[in-house]
Length: 391
Image (cartoon, rainbow, N blue to C red; front, side, top):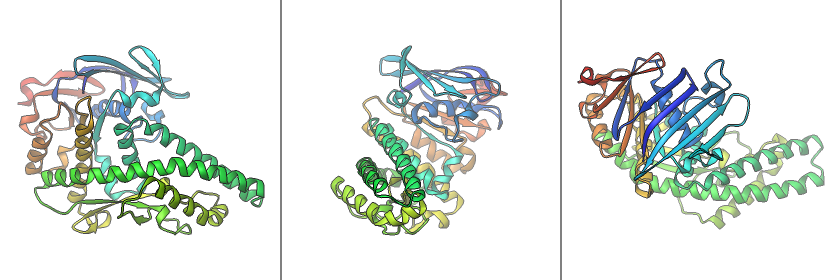
């Protein structure tokens, strides 16, 4: 899979931008704040339907504009396809594929990318929501139909929480509780599918994370990841997210049964709090190095390497399973945080990908073997090939 061309209109600081990409490695060079990350952010949005930097789409629309346009000409084998996204400041977003209207949620079917950015340090050091988002975005890239399951779960969760608030205000009347039973069933049905997919994903990621971490660090610190499920914890009275480690395999039927039982046990506390306290939206993933939780024990360098290993592992997993070729690997300002040996090892690890997009504030931070195609970005403008300047 390749990005042949990217065109932006009113996206971030770009009134308009048009950029062609080559196969192999492409490097965007520019001082901080010039707009190089905005270019890769736009591409990342096409494959995940979200920004890795902000939670609101409004920040993506250039000030004074009503909408931002992202167009990407994508190469799949011997054919090309044009994917277009209109990000509206005050309305629902719109999409086109090959000039025909399409559903926005279908865009990840056409473009697969894995993006690593400095913000991903929060995967290791931040709260559980970022780790859940990482898993779910990868789930959808891996199995696009799960986008509908995740959306159905989120919708059911909102409806159930609304009903819990209503039941609390009316004193939990019988009619409210019977309706709550219906939403429990829907939550369990969609939630169990997400739990099963996440646990399988964690199992499949483990060997890739171990290999990627070892390739970057050149040492074996025993990187490990384990799912933590709130439905196993029996702690509905706790405000903490996470849960018990899922160290044993659970079937879809067992997950449904455990989820239903956890909801039943949590109901008194949920009616009191007017909030759903168990389910995929409360789960976490435990990352460990040398047998200790990476969050709280790992150094900055170890945490950075673990986060980078997670993204490289995701790319390797998609690469192994995809019939459309490698995902586009995007590395945003990654080399600035690595010493020279780790830069060289990372360069070796990514050298075989069909297409890699790299941003860097300083051209010299990028290992020499990756400086094939380098473009200067300045003040929201694409200035062209660096040529001999980068050599």
